[in-house]
Image (tube, rainbow, N blue to C red):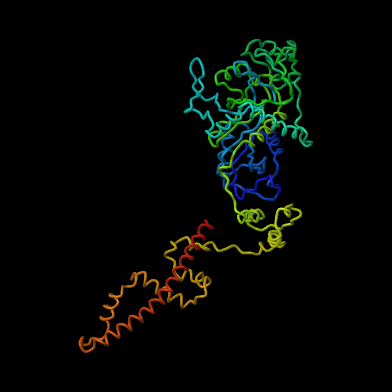
Length: 533
């Protein structure tokens, strides 16, 4: 095993990080950055009953992650996926919503600009289609009681750290390294489209047939509310003849021009694909939003969530898909970079050497509990095991395990149910005699005697003191004249006391031994209960 790779989670409860992607190209970019896929081991974590989601599990950096695949866009789809994911993976501490989005070209009163390919990391969300419709306007509900605007305290603290100049620069450089890997991936290269295709048109420059003779509907479009033809809605700027010379001039970035930059701010979220520059600017001004997307509010209500999305268009009528593959790669790269800063040390425990070896053995067990056939050289674990460990692993090999399993009959429905139906204090030798018999060298007859004696002592309590024993002895001895038989009585009392003392010592020794065995039995039964439940 790679020393830098975390141990494979034993069960679904061990996963703490979920990644959710709405589009296939977004999921492809995330999967391409997996450092290891647990499915490659032939191991499936399955799902909780009733969970319709599809998952991919693996390793990103030092973190085990589960990727949930969405069937489509929107908050309803995302909310359903997140809720079902919570059923199967109940201990998720962080959900990353990763993908592409529309962006506001300027923010911070125009002093900061966003370019295509840049990545926005959420500090909050604003649901712009959730609010109150007034006669003259629509009011967005933006109070803390109306929508979940802010992430939790732990996430806010981490974001504050990442927003510092030093950490922000480190995050950029680490993410660029991962982006370079994706751009060089021969299977699905994420090609940089070039700044010549990073076009920002004025707000009032509509996407339509620019040749007035080509379409009468588009020729009549002179104001914001005027319609354009259906062909214009599905055509590119090149097909419509949009004049690039009309684009706003934006200063080129110094230094590494091709590399995306990270921005921290609010996402405007809603069940609407934003393709209006006027509405974009209005909502951005009202909510202080940097990006526009459609899924975050659905995930936000289920998991502690951070949205990491790359700007692939300016949310205007000139929207195109040219930057989507590259944007998905940028978002995935920054998600991997972000996870390097996520500290989950508080959720880990130091593991003893026996526990580590037990986990290694468990890792060789399939989902149904059947030991898999091992080939140590092929599995690449020989170097990490001692000679004794390799011997134990080799002994687990059972080539005919499948054939053997097919001939094993299922247990009866009521098998072992009796152990759960009664408290352990009510169990007697008729139920557990087989445990007691095999638990020591004591015969069955001796056990019956011991149980009877133990029961007698439990009912009577401790032995009486010497004076009480003398009184008891006197009451049961033959009545004789006190003067005539005083010496005989004294002798008999002494002999009886000694005889009873010997019997008591022998019985006490047996009782002590039985109580110890009873304690072991109670511990064993409790272990059975905890293991089977």
